[in-house]
Amino acid sequence: MALPQTGIFALGVLAHTYLEFSVPPGVDERDVGTAVARLSESRTTMGGVNLVVGFRPELWRSLRPDRSPAGLTGYNAPVVGSDNYEMPATQRDVFVWVAGGSYDVVFDAEIEVTAALAGLATLAEETAGWTYHRDLDLTGFIDGTENPLLADAPHLVLVPDGEPGQGGSVLLLQKWLHDTAAWTALNVSEQEQVMGRTKPDSVELADRPESSHVARTDQDTFGHILRRNTAYGSPQEHGTVFIGFAASQRPLAAMLKSMAGIGGIRDELTRFARPLTGAYYFVPSSDDLRGL
Image (cartoon, rainbow, N blue to C red; front, side, top):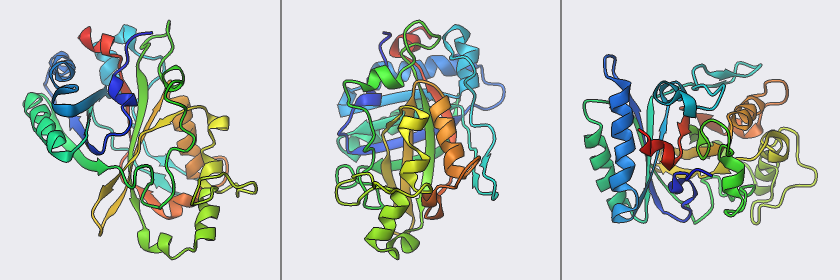
């Protein structure tokens, strides 16, 4: 298998920054690709940080058409459910995720990354994230319960050998704003019905509602993904940065449609959290980055 970007699987890091860049008209996309590829050479693991970079699928295809998964597209239109519930599209051109053991080294790396892309790409979205009580999200529930074991994850969420883009992965990036007042007004039993799991130990409910988050995103139904979510924000405005990796776009897109209620029941959790952003990126293998 082609060597993936190892930061995809670097669990246990505490501080994160997610950067999304737009490429202005007139800039040569080949120069952008070269600059992004060079980021990982000097900054990955330097100063205790991990770096993961991704490209808008159409941009990656223009750079490496022979290394682009067939049919992969950007998040170019909002996902709209039958009741007009909407998950917005905010697709950018380049994604950079910096993660480290403390925010100071992440901040330093972010400054370097932004400087390295100056004149080629404009910073359009910046979000700082952190782990919350090790493995909880801001609802108080354990996040990523269905994640594959780390030993199995590369075989499940990377493009398989022999396929275009082998060793790469498809990333869905969203920022979700929590309605904490409405959520905390529910008692624990009501919250568990929304999630479809118990709150203390994340055991799936035997009688989970079909509208529960677990039912609407069941990986046995849609396929395997690896979630690397973090919390973001301040006490006044906060939520979850959704980071989902998969071997193809299909399971990610199907889960979004299911959550929005397209062809079924809307995910009850969407009544307590609202997506602010939505983008797909192709995260190529380290080998393919070196090819740039």
